[in-house]
Length: 238
Image (tube, rainbow, N blue to C red):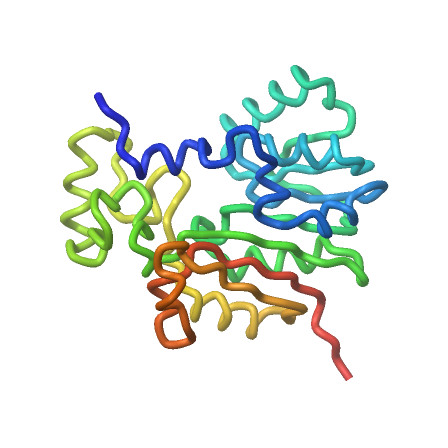
């Protein structure tokens, strides 16, 4: 079976021979890592968590709610020789200097609760660095369901779930129940969630889709943004 462009994008091949952390978060961010306790929230298979350790983090804690994925991450850490500086768990009480979240905010079942949990796990002067996408109105914002651009907006959720059942037998009845989850996150919704959370924006960057860059502006951003990148800190209360 041939792999579609969307499947290649999801496979991580876009970052082959490149640092995903550096590509998404920048070299300046990587300079903050040495000696820090870092939480990778939504760590998946642990590859970014291991790179954080390689970049000098004192301790990296990868959090994910899928134990089978955490087991894979633990194997990767052992194979890389970083099992002592990386641990992978569903929950932790360890406070962090820095929380990183890569390609996760469009998947969290309850992103508002995730923000509250991040606040609990972050030291008072700590920060959250998040990068995610594609968001819901991106041409491929339906992830697996984007069989062609904006297909997830053309067909109903019920129709797409029925189509998925032809090759997946996990019994998912909606986007949120699929492997990894899909919460239909938009840029506007994310901004509202942060506004209602214990955090405030230090910065936010909306990286445009390269071919749609000339059309990217505040009116078209939901449809022409490739990646949302932001830095958050605890809200200052007077």
